[in-house]
Image (cartoon, rainbow over all chains, first blue to last red; front, side):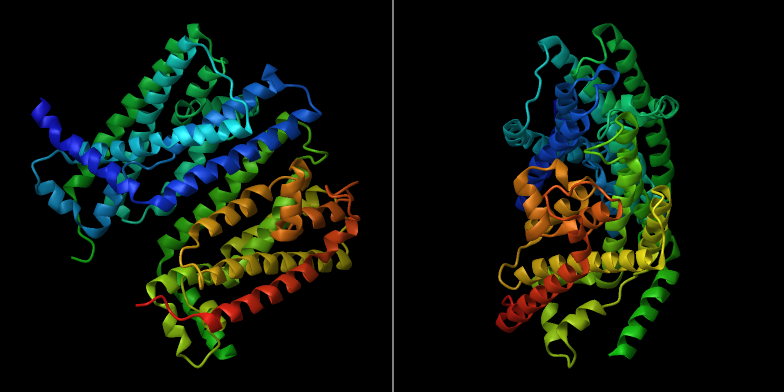
Length: 265
Length: 264
Protein backbone atom coordinates (compact mmCIF):
# COMPACT_ATOMS: atom_id res chain seq x y z
CA UNK A 1 0.00 0.00 0.00
CA UNK A 2 2.76 2.42 0.99
CA UNK A 3 4.64 1.65 -2.20
CA UNK A 4 1.51 2.36 -4.22
CA UNK A 5 1.02 5.73 -2.53
CA UNK A 6 4.61 6.86 -3.01
CA UNK A 7 4.20 8.39 -6.50
CA UNK A 8 1.19 10.42 -5.35
CA UNK A 9 3.08 11.82 -2.38
CA UNK A 10 5.80 12.87 -4.82
CA UNK A 11 3.21 14.52 -7.08
CA UNK A 12 1.92 16.50 -4.08
CA UNK A 13 5.44 17.57 -3.06
CA UNK A 14 6.16 18.63 -6.61
CA UNK A 15 3.00 20.74 -6.68
CA UNK A 16 4.04 22.43 -3.41
CA UNK A 17 7.44 23.28 -4.83
CA UNK A 18 5.82 24.65 -7.97
CA UNK A 19 3.48 26.92 -5.98
CA UNK A 20 6.38 28.22 -3.90
CA UNK A 21 8.00 29.65 -7.03
CA UNK A 22 5.10 32.10 -7.55
CA UNK A 23 6.36 34.63 -5.04
CA UNK A 24 4.18 37.37 -6.43
CA UNK A 25 1.04 35.33 -5.82
CA UNK A 26 2.11 34.71 -2.25
CA UNK A 27 2.56 38.41 -1.68
CA UNK A 28 -0.78 39.32 -3.21
CA UNK A 29 -2.81 36.65 -1.48
CA UNK A 30 -1.57 37.83 1.93
CA UNK A 31 -1.87 41.52 0.99
CA UNK A 32 -5.34 40.92 -0.43
CA UNK A 33 -6.44 39.33 2.78
CA UNK A 34 -5.33 42.30 4.88
CA UNK A 35 -7.20 44.73 2.62
CA UNK A 36 -10.33 42.59 2.69
CA UNK A 37 -10.21 42.19 6.46
CA UNK A 38 -10.06 45.97 6.82
CA UNK A 39 -12.99 46.30 4.39
CA UNK A 40 -15.14 43.74 6.19
CA UNK A 41 -14.52 45.51 9.48
CA UNK A 42 -15.59 48.96 8.29
CA UNK A 43 -18.58 47.57 6.36
CA UNK A 44 -20.03 45.61 9.30
CA UNK A 45 -19.26 48.35 11.79
CA UNK A 46 -21.13 50.83 9.57
CA UNK A 47 -24.10 48.48 9.17
CA UNK A 48 -24.34 47.76 12.89
CA UNK A 49 -23.77 51.38 13.96
CA UNK A 50 -27.39 52.50 13.76
CA UNK A 51 -29.20 49.16 13.73
CA UNK A 52 -29.99 46.33 16.15
CA UNK A 53 -28.22 42.98 15.75
CA UNK A 54 -30.29 40.97 13.23
CA UNK A 55 -31.26 37.38 14.15
CA UNK A 56 -29.30 37.86 17.37
CA UNK A 57 -25.96 37.80 15.55
CA UNK A 58 -23.74 40.29 17.37
CA UNK A 59 -21.14 42.48 15.66
CA UNK A 60 -18.17 40.57 17.12
CA UNK A 61 -19.67 37.29 15.86
CA UNK A 62 -20.19 38.61 12.33
CA UNK A 63 -16.67 40.02 12.20
CA UNK A 64 -15.30 36.66 13.36
CA UNK A 65 -17.50 34.93 10.77
CA UNK A 66 -16.31 37.11 7.90
CA UNK A 67 -12.63 37.01 8.87
CA UNK A 68 -12.65 33.21 9.19
CA UNK A 69 -14.54 33.03 5.86
CA UNK A 70 -11.73 34.98 4.19
CA UNK A 71 -9.10 32.66 5.67
CA UNK A 72 -11.11 29.61 4.52
CA UNK A 73 -11.38 31.19 1.06
CA UNK A 74 -7.57 31.07 0.79
CA UNK A 75 -8.05 27.30 0.46
CA UNK A 76 -11.59 26.86 -0.84
CA UNK A 77 -11.26 29.39 -3.66
CA UNK A 78 -8.35 27.45 -5.17
CA UNK A 79 -9.27 25.35 -8.16
CA UNK A 80 -7.22 22.28 -7.21
CA UNK A 81 -7.93 20.47 -10.46
CA UNK A 82 -7.05 23.25 -12.92
CA UNK A 83 -4.16 21.02 -14.00
CA UNK A 84 -6.71 18.84 -15.79
CA UNK A 85 -7.95 21.80 -17.79
CA UNK A 86 -4.37 22.81 -18.69
CA UNK A 87 -3.50 19.29 -19.74
CA UNK A 88 -6.60 19.02 -21.91
CA UNK A 89 -5.67 22.28 -23.53
CA UNK A 90 -2.12 21.37 -24.52
CA UNK A 91 -2.95 17.70 -25.09
CA UNK A 92 -0.44 16.36 -22.54
CA UNK A 93 -3.26 14.44 -20.84
CA UNK A 94 -2.67 11.75 -23.47
CA UNK A 95 0.77 11.03 -22.00
CA UNK A 96 -0.69 10.79 -18.48
CA UNK A 97 -3.19 8.20 -19.66
CA UNK A 98 -0.26 6.05 -20.80
CA UNK A 99 1.50 6.22 -17.42
CA UNK A 100 0.92 3.44 -14.89
CA UNK A 101 -0.97 5.79 -12.56
CA UNK A 102 -4.55 6.66 -11.81
CA UNK A 103 -5.06 10.05 -13.46
CA UNK A 104 -7.82 11.23 -11.06
CA UNK A 105 -5.61 10.38 -8.06
CA UNK A 106 -2.69 12.14 -9.71
CA UNK A 107 -4.88 15.25 -10.08
CA UNK A 108 -6.02 14.92 -6.46
CA UNK A 109 -2.43 14.62 -5.23
CA UNK A 110 -1.34 17.63 -7.27
CA UNK A 111 -4.28 19.68 -5.98
CA UNK A 112 -3.56 18.66 -2.39
CA UNK A 113 0.04 19.79 -2.74
CA UNK A 114 -1.09 23.14 -4.06
CA UNK A 115 -3.63 23.52 -1.26
CA UNK A 116 -1.15 22.52 1.48
CA UNK A 117 1.21 25.25 0.35
CA UNK A 118 -1.57 27.83 0.50
CA UNK A 119 -2.72 26.46 3.85
CA UNK A 120 0.70 27.38 5.25
CA UNK A 121 0.05 30.97 4.16
CA UNK A 122 -2.92 31.11 6.54
CA UNK A 123 -0.50 31.51 9.47
CA UNK A 124 1.03 34.86 8.40
CA UNK A 125 -2.37 35.95 7.05
CA UNK A 126 -4.04 35.24 10.37
CA UNK A 127 -1.33 37.15 12.21
CA UNK A 128 -1.92 40.12 9.94
CA UNK A 129 -5.71 39.85 10.27
CA UNK A 130 -5.43 39.88 14.07
CA UNK A 131 -3.77 43.30 13.88
CA UNK A 132 -6.91 44.62 12.16
CA UNK A 133 -9.79 42.77 13.83
CA UNK A 134 -10.53 40.72 16.90
CA UNK A 135 -11.42 37.11 16.08
CA UNK A 136 -13.37 35.16 18.70
CA UNK A 137 -11.81 31.87 19.82
CA UNK A 138 -14.31 29.05 20.38
CA UNK A 139 -13.98 26.12 22.81
CA UNK A 140 -11.77 23.18 21.85
CA UNK A 141 -14.79 20.99 21.03
CA UNK A 142 -16.35 23.60 18.77
CA UNK A 143 -13.02 24.26 17.08
CA UNK A 144 -12.55 20.53 16.53
CA UNK A 145 -16.00 20.28 14.94
CA UNK A 146 -15.16 23.29 12.77
CA UNK A 147 -11.98 21.62 11.52
CA UNK A 148 -13.85 18.40 10.67
CA UNK A 149 -16.56 20.35 8.86
CA UNK A 150 -13.95 22.45 7.00
CA UNK A 151 -12.28 19.21 5.91
CA UNK A 152 -15.61 17.97 4.52
CA UNK A 153 -16.11 21.35 2.82
CA UNK A 154 -12.77 20.88 1.09
CA UNK A 155 -13.98 17.63 -0.47
CA UNK A 156 -17.26 19.19 -1.60
CA UNK A 157 -15.17 21.86 -3.32
CA UNK A 158 -12.79 19.31 -4.81
CA UNK A 159 -15.56 17.33 -6.49
CA UNK A 160 -17.30 20.49 -7.72
CA UNK A 161 -14.09 21.74 -9.31
CA UNK A 162 -13.23 18.32 -10.66
CA UNK A 163 -16.64 18.02 -12.34
CA UNK A 164 -16.29 21.49 -13.81
CA UNK A 165 -12.81 20.79 -15.16
CA UNK A 166 -14.06 17.57 -16.74
CA UNK A 167 -16.39 19.74 -18.85
CA UNK A 168 -13.21 20.88 -20.61
CA UNK A 169 -13.20 17.41 -22.28
CA UNK A 170 -16.04 18.81 -24.39
CA UNK A 171 -15.59 22.59 -24.51
CA UNK A 172 -11.81 23.05 -23.95
CA UNK A 173 -12.34 26.64 -22.73
CA UNK A 174 -13.73 27.00 -19.24
CA UNK A 175 -11.74 29.74 -17.47
CA UNK A 176 -14.74 32.08 -17.47
CA UNK A 177 -16.93 29.37 -15.94
CA UNK A 178 -14.31 28.66 -13.27
CA UNK A 179 -14.25 32.26 -12.09
CA UNK A 180 -18.03 32.36 -12.10
CA UNK A 181 -18.13 29.26 -9.92
CA UNK A 182 -15.78 30.90 -7.40
CA UNK A 183 -17.98 33.99 -7.07
CA UNK A 184 -21.19 31.99 -6.93
CA UNK A 185 -19.68 29.72 -4.26
CA UNK A 186 -18.58 32.72 -2.18
CA UNK A 187 -22.01 34.35 -2.38
CA UNK A 188 -24.41 31.38 -2.26
CA UNK A 189 -22.14 29.50 0.15
CA UNK A 190 -22.46 32.31 2.69
CA UNK A 191 -18.83 33.38 2.38
CA UNK A 192 -19.64 37.08 1.87
CA UNK A 193 -22.90 37.56 3.77
CA UNK A 194 -24.19 34.85 6.16
CA UNK A 195 -27.06 32.88 4.61
CA UNK A 196 -29.08 33.77 7.73
CA UNK A 197 -29.39 37.30 6.35
CA UNK A 198 -30.94 36.21 3.04
CA UNK A 199 -34.75 36.54 2.84
CA UNK A 200 -36.40 33.34 4.14
CA UNK A 201 -37.66 31.94 0.81
CA UNK A 202 -34.36 32.45 -1.01
CA UNK A 203 -32.50 31.09 1.99
CA UNK A 204 -34.36 27.78 1.79
CA UNK A 205 -33.54 27.46 -1.90
CA UNK A 206 -29.85 28.23 -1.32
CA UNK A 207 -29.49 25.81 1.58
CA UNK A 208 -30.65 23.06 -0.81
CA UNK A 209 -27.55 23.69 -3.00
CA UNK A 210 -24.10 22.21 -2.32
CA UNK A 211 -22.49 25.65 -1.82
CA UNK A 212 -23.81 26.01 1.74
CA UNK A 213 -21.77 22.93 2.68
CA UNK A 214 -18.59 24.79 1.71
CA UNK A 215 -18.64 28.03 3.71
CA UNK A 216 -21.83 28.32 5.71
CA UNK A 217 -21.75 25.05 7.67
CA UNK A 218 -18.18 25.27 9.06
CA UNK A 219 -18.61 28.99 9.77
CA UNK A 220 -21.91 28.62 11.62
CA UNK A 221 -20.31 25.85 13.68
CA UNK A 222 -17.41 28.20 14.48
CA UNK A 223 -19.59 31.08 15.71
CA UNK A 224 -21.92 28.70 17.57
CA UNK A 225 -25.04 29.25 15.45
CA UNK A 226 -25.05 25.51 14.76
CA UNK A 227 -25.27 23.82 18.17
CA UNK A 228 -23.41 20.55 19.06
CA UNK A 229 -26.68 18.57 18.88
CA UNK A 230 -27.10 19.71 15.25
CA UNK A 231 -23.57 18.73 14.16
CA UNK A 232 -24.62 15.27 12.97
CA UNK A 233 -27.40 16.70 10.82
CA UNK A 234 -25.25 19.36 9.12
CA UNK A 235 -22.16 17.23 8.65
CA UNK A 236 -24.40 14.44 7.38
CA UNK A 237 -25.59 16.82 4.70
CA UNK A 238 -21.98 17.65 3.82
CA UNK A 239 -21.23 13.93 3.50
CA UNK A 240 -24.30 13.48 1.33
CA UNK A 241 -23.09 16.20 -1.03
CA UNK A 242 -19.63 14.63 -1.17
CA UNK A 243 -21.23 11.31 -2.14
CA UNK A 244 -23.52 12.86 -4.77
CA UNK A 245 -20.78 15.00 -6.32
CA UNK A 246 -18.31 12.09 -6.28
CA UNK A 247 -20.77 10.01 -8.32
CA UNK A 248 -21.40 12.89 -10.76
CA UNK A 249 -17.64 13.52 -11.10
CA UNK A 250 -16.94 9.83 -11.75
CA UNK A 251 -19.64 9.57 -14.43
CA UNK A 252 -18.46 12.71 -16.23
CA UNK A 253 -14.81 11.69 -15.92
CA UNK A 254 -15.47 8.27 -17.49
CA UNK A 255 -17.50 9.79 -20.32
CA UNK A 256 -14.85 12.46 -20.94
CA UNK A 257 -11.85 10.15 -20.77
CA UNK A 258 -13.42 8.00 -23.46
CA UNK A 259 -13.46 10.86 -25.93
CA UNK A 260 -10.09 12.50 -25.37
CA UNK A 261 -9.34 14.78 -28.26
CA UNK A 262 -6.17 16.69 -28.78
CA UNK A 263 -6.57 20.28 -29.79
CA UNK A 264 -4.64 21.08 -32.92
CA UNK A 265 -3.79 17.42 -33.66
CA UNK B 1 -5.50 57.50 -37.92
CA UNK B 2 -9.30 57.55 -37.92
CA UNK B 3 -9.29 54.94 -40.66
CA UNK B 4 -6.98 52.71 -38.62
CA UNK B 5 -9.26 53.07 -35.62
CA UNK B 6 -12.32 52.24 -37.71
CA UNK B 7 -10.61 49.10 -39.01
CA UNK B 8 -9.67 48.23 -35.44
CA UNK B 9 -13.31 48.16 -34.36
CA UNK B 10 -14.25 46.22 -37.47
CA UNK B 11 -11.72 43.49 -36.54
CA UNK B 12 -12.89 43.49 -32.92
CA UNK B 13 -16.51 42.97 -33.86
CA UNK B 14 -15.70 40.37 -36.50
CA UNK B 15 -13.52 38.46 -34.02
CA UNK B 16 -16.37 38.51 -31.51
CA UNK B 17 -18.73 37.14 -34.15
CA UNK B 18 -16.24 34.42 -35.05
CA UNK B 19 -15.92 33.15 -31.47
CA UNK B 20 -19.56 33.27 -30.47
CA UNK B 21 -19.46 30.64 -27.72
CA UNK B 22 -16.49 32.37 -26.17
CA UNK B 23 -18.28 35.70 -26.33
CA UNK B 24 -21.38 34.27 -24.65
CA UNK B 25 -19.20 32.73 -21.92
CA UNK B 26 -17.47 36.04 -21.18
CA UNK B 27 -20.77 37.90 -21.34
CA UNK B 28 -22.15 35.46 -18.75
CA UNK B 29 -18.99 36.08 -16.75
CA UNK B 30 -19.59 39.86 -16.78
CA UNK B 31 -23.19 39.40 -15.67
CA UNK B 32 -22.28 37.01 -12.85
CA UNK B 33 -19.47 39.29 -11.65
CA UNK B 34 -21.72 42.32 -11.27
CA UNK B 35 -24.73 40.29 -10.14
CA UNK B 36 -22.85 38.70 -7.21
CA UNK B 37 -21.66 42.15 -6.08
CA UNK B 38 -25.14 43.66 -6.33
CA UNK B 39 -26.91 40.71 -4.68
CA UNK B 40 -24.46 40.86 -1.75
CA UNK B 41 -25.29 44.57 -1.31
CA UNK B 42 -29.00 43.79 -1.60
CA UNK B 43 -28.84 41.10 1.10
CA UNK B 44 -26.92 43.41 3.45
CA UNK B 45 -29.42 46.20 2.93
CA UNK B 46 -32.50 44.06 3.35
CA UNK B 47 -31.13 42.90 6.70
CA UNK B 48 -30.06 46.41 7.69
CA UNK B 49 -32.11 49.42 6.56
CA UNK B 50 -29.13 51.54 5.64
CA UNK B 51 -25.37 52.06 5.71
CA UNK B 52 -24.35 55.55 6.86
CA UNK B 53 -27.70 56.83 5.56
CA UNK B 54 -27.50 55.03 2.20
CA UNK B 55 -30.23 52.48 1.42
CA UNK B 56 -30.09 49.80 -1.28
CA UNK B 57 -31.47 52.06 -4.02
CA UNK B 58 -28.82 54.67 -3.25
CA UNK B 59 -26.12 52.01 -3.25
CA UNK B 60 -27.38 50.67 -6.60
CA UNK B 61 -27.00 54.15 -8.06
CA UNK B 62 -23.53 54.36 -6.53
CA UNK B 63 -22.64 51.03 -8.14
CA UNK B 64 -24.22 52.01 -11.47
CA UNK B 65 -22.15 55.20 -11.73
CA UNK B 66 -18.91 53.33 -11.06
CA UNK B 67 -19.85 50.44 -13.34
CA UNK B 68 -20.66 52.72 -16.30
CA UNK B 69 -17.49 54.78 -16.00
CA UNK B 70 -15.41 51.64 -15.57
CA UNK B 71 -17.10 49.86 -18.49
CA UNK B 72 -16.59 52.91 -20.72
CA UNK B 73 -12.87 52.80 -20.01
CA UNK B 74 -12.70 49.00 -20.31
CA UNK B 75 -14.44 49.07 -23.69
CA UNK B 76 -12.14 51.58 -25.33
CA UNK B 77 -8.86 51.38 -23.45
CA UNK B 78 -8.55 47.88 -21.96
CA UNK B 79 -5.26 47.23 -23.79
CA UNK B 80 -3.50 49.91 -21.67
CA UNK B 81 -3.33 47.34 -18.87
CA UNK B 82 -1.41 44.95 -21.11
CA UNK B 83 1.55 47.31 -21.63
CA UNK B 84 3.64 45.90 -18.72
CA UNK B 85 3.29 42.40 -20.19
CA UNK B 86 4.36 43.65 -23.62
CA UNK B 87 7.33 45.45 -22.13
CA UNK B 88 8.39 42.27 -20.35
CA UNK B 89 8.06 40.16 -23.52
CA UNK B 90 9.81 42.74 -25.68
CA UNK B 91 6.62 43.04 -27.75
CA UNK B 92 6.42 46.71 -26.92
CA UNK B 93 9.65 47.53 -28.78
CA UNK B 94 7.87 46.73 -32.03
CA UNK B 95 5.53 49.70 -31.52
CA UNK B 96 8.48 52.08 -31.22
CA UNK B 97 9.63 51.59 -34.81
CA UNK B 98 6.23 52.19 -36.40
CA UNK B 99 5.24 55.62 -37.72
CA UNK B 100 2.26 56.11 -35.41
CA UNK B 101 1.95 57.38 -31.85
CA UNK B 102 2.80 54.54 -29.43
CA UNK B 103 -0.19 55.10 -27.18
CA UNK B 104 -2.54 55.15 -30.15
CA UNK B 105 -1.07 51.86 -31.32
CA UNK B 106 -1.66 50.35 -27.89
CA UNK B 107 -5.28 51.54 -27.87
CA UNK B 108 -5.89 50.17 -31.35
CA UNK B 109 -4.45 46.68 -30.83
CA UNK B 110 -7.33 44.39 -31.73
CA UNK B 111 -8.71 41.68 -29.50
CA UNK B 112 -12.27 40.44 -29.24
CA UNK B 113 -13.69 43.54 -27.61
CA UNK B 114 -17.42 44.12 -27.68
CA UNK B 115 -19.32 46.86 -25.81
CA UNK B 116 -21.47 44.33 -23.91
CA UNK B 117 -20.41 45.47 -20.44
CA UNK B 118 -21.06 49.10 -21.35
CA UNK B 119 -24.58 48.31 -22.58
CA UNK B 120 -25.25 46.34 -19.39
CA UNK B 121 -23.87 49.18 -17.25
CA UNK B 122 -26.01 51.84 -18.91
CA UNK B 123 -29.12 49.68 -18.52
CA UNK B 124 -28.36 49.15 -14.83
CA UNK B 125 -27.68 52.85 -14.29
CA UNK B 126 -31.00 53.78 -15.91
CA UNK B 127 -32.87 51.35 -13.62
CA UNK B 128 -31.02 52.73 -10.57
CA UNK B 129 -31.87 56.32 -11.54
CA UNK B 130 -35.54 55.37 -11.89
CA UNK B 131 -35.51 53.52 -8.55
CA UNK B 132 -34.19 56.64 -6.80
CA UNK B 133 -36.96 58.78 -8.34
CA UNK B 134 -34.41 61.30 -9.56
CA UNK B 135 -35.86 64.08 -11.67
CA UNK B 136 -34.57 63.40 -15.17
CA UNK B 137 -34.10 66.60 -17.13
CA UNK B 138 -31.85 67.26 -20.12
CA UNK B 139 -29.46 68.97 -17.70
CA UNK B 140 -29.39 65.92 -15.43
CA UNK B 141 -28.67 63.57 -18.33
CA UNK B 142 -25.85 65.83 -19.50
CA UNK B 143 -24.37 65.95 -15.98
CA UNK B 144 -24.53 62.16 -15.57
CA UNK B 145 -22.90 61.71 -18.99
CA UNK B 146 -20.13 64.13 -18.02
CA UNK B 147 -19.59 62.39 -14.67
CA UNK B 148 -19.44 58.97 -16.31
CA UNK B 149 -16.96 60.25 -18.91
CA UNK B 150 -14.90 61.89 -16.17
CA UNK B 151 -15.03 58.63 -14.22
CA UNK B 152 -13.77 56.73 -17.26
CA UNK B 153 -10.91 59.24 -17.61
CA UNK B 154 -9.95 58.74 -13.95
CA UNK B 155 -10.00 54.97 -14.47
CA UNK B 156 -7.93 55.37 -17.65
CA UNK B 157 -5.40 57.72 -16.03
CA UNK B 158 -4.75 55.35 -13.15
CA UNK B 159 -4.31 52.43 -15.56
CA UNK B 160 -1.93 54.49 -17.68
CA UNK B 161 0.09 55.60 -14.64
CA UNK B 162 0.47 52.02 -13.46
CA UNK B 163 1.54 50.87 -16.91
CA UNK B 164 4.00 53.77 -17.07
CA UNK B 165 5.67 52.53 -13.88
CA UNK B 166 6.56 49.42 -15.89
CA UNK B 167 9.11 51.51 -17.84
CA UNK B 168 11.10 51.77 -14.61
CA UNK B 169 10.11 48.63 -12.74
CA UNK B 170 9.31 45.73 -15.00
CA UNK B 171 7.19 43.95 -12.38
CA UNK B 172 4.10 46.07 -11.57
CA UNK B 173 1.49 43.35 -11.06
CA UNK B 174 1.36 43.78 -7.29
CA UNK B 175 0.80 47.53 -7.57
CA UNK B 176 -1.85 47.10 -10.23
CA UNK B 177 -3.52 44.44 -8.21
CA UNK B 178 -3.78 46.56 -5.02
CA UNK B 179 -5.16 49.55 -6.93
CA UNK B 180 -7.66 47.32 -8.71
CA UNK B 181 -8.94 46.00 -5.41
CA UNK B 182 -9.26 49.52 -4.01
CA UNK B 183 -11.23 50.44 -7.09
CA UNK B 184 -13.52 47.45 -7.42
CA UNK B 185 -14.36 46.72 -3.80
CA UNK B 186 -13.97 50.05 -2.02
CA UNK B 187 -16.18 51.97 -4.49
CA UNK B 188 -19.14 49.73 -3.63
CA UNK B 189 -19.74 51.44 -0.29
CA UNK B 190 -20.17 55.07 0.78
CA UNK B 191 -16.72 56.62 1.29
CA UNK B 192 -17.81 57.91 4.69
CA UNK B 193 -17.50 54.42 6.26
CA UNK B 194 -13.70 54.39 5.89
CA UNK B 195 -11.05 55.80 8.19
CA UNK B 196 -9.70 59.29 7.48
CA UNK B 197 -6.58 58.07 5.71
CA UNK B 198 -8.48 55.81 3.30
CA UNK B 199 -11.02 58.59 2.61
CA UNK B 200 -8.27 61.05 1.71
CA UNK B 201 -6.50 58.40 -0.38
CA UNK B 202 -9.64 57.67 -2.40
CA UNK B 203 -10.47 61.35 -2.78
CA UNK B 204 -7.16 62.89 -3.79
CA UNK B 205 -4.40 60.36 -4.38
CA UNK B 206 -6.20 57.71 -6.44
CA UNK B 207 -9.46 59.64 -6.89
CA UNK B 208 -11.87 56.70 -7.27
CA UNK B 209 -14.24 58.57 -4.94
CA UNK B 210 -14.87 60.96 -7.80
CA UNK B 211 -15.97 58.11 -10.07
CA UNK B 212 -19.09 57.55 -8.01
CA UNK B 213 -19.28 58.60 -4.35
CA UNK B 214 -18.92 62.39 -4.63
CA UNK B 215 -21.18 62.77 -7.70
CA UNK B 216 -23.75 60.36 -6.21
CA UNK B 217 -23.83 62.38 -2.95
CA UNK B 218 -24.63 65.43 -5.06
CA UNK B 219 -27.28 63.78 -7.25
CA UNK B 220 -28.97 62.15 -4.25
CA UNK B 221 -28.89 65.37 -2.17
CA UNK B 222 -27.04 63.75 0.71
CA UNK B 223 -26.30 65.85 3.78
CA UNK B 224 -22.56 65.28 3.76
CA UNK B 225 -19.88 63.63 1.68
CA UNK B 226 -17.56 62.19 4.25
CA UNK B 227 -14.96 64.95 4.04
CA UNK B 228 -17.07 67.98 4.96
CA UNK B 229 -16.64 69.42 1.47
CA UNK B 230 -19.51 71.19 -0.34
CA UNK B 231 -21.67 68.62 -2.18
CA UNK B 232 -20.99 70.42 -5.45
CA UNK B 233 -17.42 69.01 -5.50
CA UNK B 234 -19.09 65.94 -6.99
CA UNK B 235 -19.47 67.88 -10.22
CA UNK B 236 -15.69 68.31 -10.45
CA UNK B 237 -15.34 64.73 -11.72
CA UNK B 238 -14.86 65.65 -15.42
CA UNK B 239 -12.25 68.29 -14.52
CA UNK B 240 -10.42 65.87 -12.24
CA UNK B 241 -10.54 63.26 -15.00
CA UNK B 242 -8.97 65.66 -17.51
CA UNK B 243 -6.29 66.88 -15.08
CA UNK B 244 -5.35 63.33 -14.10
CA UNK B 245 -5.21 62.26 -17.72
CA UNK B 246 -2.85 65.14 -18.57
CA UNK B 247 -0.61 64.22 -15.63
CA UNK B 248 -0.70 60.55 -16.59
CA UNK B 249 0.08 61.34 -20.24
CA UNK B 250 3.05 63.54 -19.29
CA UNK B 251 4.41 60.75 -17.09
CA UNK B 252 3.88 58.33 -19.96
CA UNK B 253 5.88 60.56 -22.35
CA UNK B 254 8.63 60.85 -19.78
CA UNK B 255 8.74 57.08 -19.32
CA UNK B 256 8.70 56.52 -23.05
CA UNK B 257 11.66 58.85 -23.63
CA UNK B 258 13.63 57.15 -20.94
CA UNK B 259 12.72 53.63 -22.03
CA UNK B 260 15.64 51.56 -23.30
CA UNK B 261 14.09 48.13 -23.60
CA UNK B 262 14.46 45.36 -21.07
CA UNK B 263 17.48 43.75 -22.70
CA UNK B 264 16.15 41.15 -25.10
